[in-house]
Length: 231
Image 1: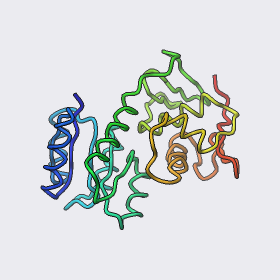
Image 2: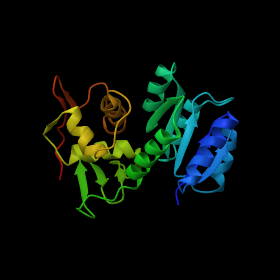
Image 3: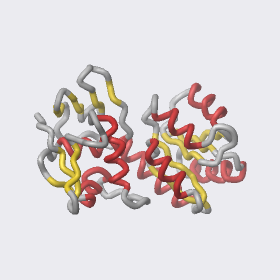
């Protein structure tokens, strides 16, 4: 049973989502702010957060930033319709998805199921395959990226899928549609140009100079190409 934490300062929103998601078979925990969420996280595993941006005290963007430094937990931001810039910042910080208020519980359920499938997606057929490039190692079965110095580099689920798509297609120009097909496997993407933002985030991990990338290069008018040698 997956565990979902609903983090929102509105008690009606919290209780509505709790009742609906528990009725769909999920274990649901509630927090009204970042401090209560920290207590829940210390008590045990949480698979996914439904995280309101407009929290009292530490807001949802700060929570996202802190969690992404230490965890690959699934994060769906809950935002107001006027919070477009905050949504973009949240995605840059590593949130996996967002949904705007007012929302239908069925939409929350669909987004939640989609993200949990991505997080738990089984490995590609090649089992224990490891892809290597420029001293980096991408372990496809363990969903793990090891830097040239031997330390693990943290990637979100979407970032891992994007890097896997690149290293499995080196030297090939991939359009945004190609990358969406390869990374999300048919799951809908609720925000425009999501691939561009994922590429920017991934460059910060694997490039010496993200502003002048040498591995994930832009092919103007066409898409992106991974031009490092892969074995």
